[in-house]
Length: 254
Image (cartoon, rainbow, N blue to C red; front, side, top):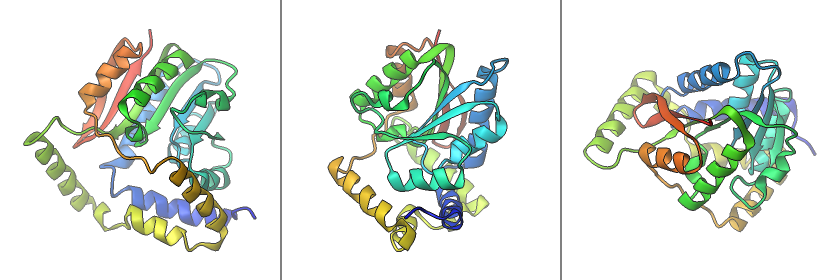
């Protein structure tokens, strides 16, 4: 049984509100990423974009609205979030089920030309450093000359007291915007698990998470990401936006 459009809309809208708890000025960060993509692809006919860790299509939908002529491939390993994206943001992207960083993960993308831009939002910090470096190298190989990787994520400071100050700034901003009042990650998933239309997808998600060993978060600094990107072959790397620990980091291939 598939997920109805109404059910998908409901859970995607709740997802959007829930995510505002975790990304300071999330909408502004999406806008900045789209600004970068627009600049990198200016003058190109039907640019090819890759959305890494797409979840339910939040970034893909915004890119499709900004760049309606783009071809977007959206990738994730979570079957539940992918199905919500396919149903609610049907025309935004071609959704692909694969594990970023796994052996031959890019074969599943079925690309027939070089990428113009790869984007990611709060997804790549789940990769351990060796896997992240391999992923960066693979993306560099897939991108055309002049193409770019654009990563919006949380990059912590090297240590206290700066990390404490950055966290404080983020908390105060969240309080002013009232985003801290939204349901949290655990509450969203607990509620989604009770939705009958999502039951089979939730079971498959649990099976996959168990087979992946649970995973964790690897809090690499922006400086370390820049080092890895240069090792991977990106000659030009720079942050273009920051608020608290939330950054947009751009790496351009020669």
